[in-house]
Image 1: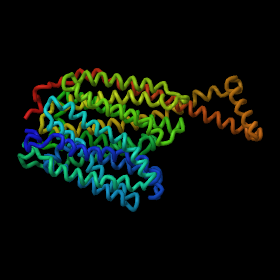
Image 2: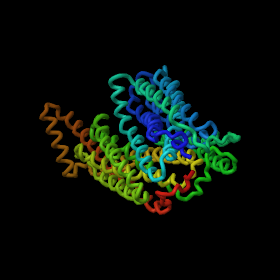
Image 3: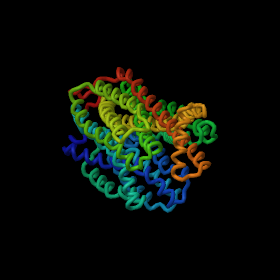
Image 4: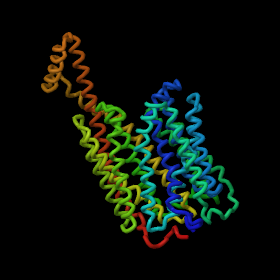
Length: 519
């Protein structure tokens, strides 16, 4: 029996109850990014240290995500969900009042751990509350909430930081958290299969190894480029911990009677393929969404607000498209919709590959809108198709792993994009430097033109020489940067296309039957 049928509660009230904490958690993932310089000043922290405000949240989030289903079974889903909302809200209050960086990082770990379970639990409740022919629409509604975060987060964080104080980016969670807690208390109920209490032996080794592997992996990905990857003993140590603990975790989880994460679910080929596709989509999405504002701010001189304005229409395109995709899923094969979405995603990256330093606002905005349409056609049907073959008692486990793989894909994407950017900028700079020579007439003309313009402004000839050379070098670095960005967009486009064959491994969903998720 589904949650709504048990107590005859309106499914839309259940939807609002799970969407509120989900949106709050997703906004908090990105809201702190723009406030980092302000935190740095008021907490007297270095640039390297203050980034742990973001990293600590992601690490604890990654640790909790895969164990969500197990925790819901042990404590009861309703009780666990309400505990997470209460903890998240309390941690937000503590983050806002943190007196120093160490305490802020500790409270962010607590906040990330509480927030990690909110999305998979919300998804599991939605998948159970709606009948099979409406699950596409349910995931579309969930997707709209999920997309609101990345659109609203940076803009809201910037506005609050500029007009109030960075501490208010955390305090703003308090009223939302209280309303969400009250709604969950009234409208969320545990389904019958979670009420059957049986003694569950706690998988302590699994708990320890999961924490060690996910935590170390996140640290390696977040700090790799900064510490020059494997030339750093710190990164090598954490990489070794990651590999050893992951191998041990797989062995422990496959042999334990009540494992924290049920790896046996990956025997389901459709579920495995869907998870791998989501990992790659996370890789493409997070890396491209990081690169576009970086291109605009470092090469085009856009402010953070203007860069956000370029990104926003793409998010709006996703929001508008998602309900249509949800409706189409009730009648169409979800795999075909994902196929079109991946093609559109690849097309948007190939358009971005043509961006140059002469581009106007619209040149940067419309490829992002194209990507927005593509993402709406990937996320909703992929989630619905991947989770459709999972039995209800395993839904919490499945949604936890599905979200974890998206997040890890995102972390890998950002880490690889920043590394490639640094290496490719250097490569293209070396190529372009070869053209800087007194024997190159194009360079000579440009240099002399700049020098004459500076002299005409009243600058001494010797000074004008040096200034013109500096300006030319600045222009060369910008050109090298633009070429590096373009090359990475091209690689991301190819990555979108590379996962198309995996769609054949996904199982077509039935719109009438209950299938694997039946009562």
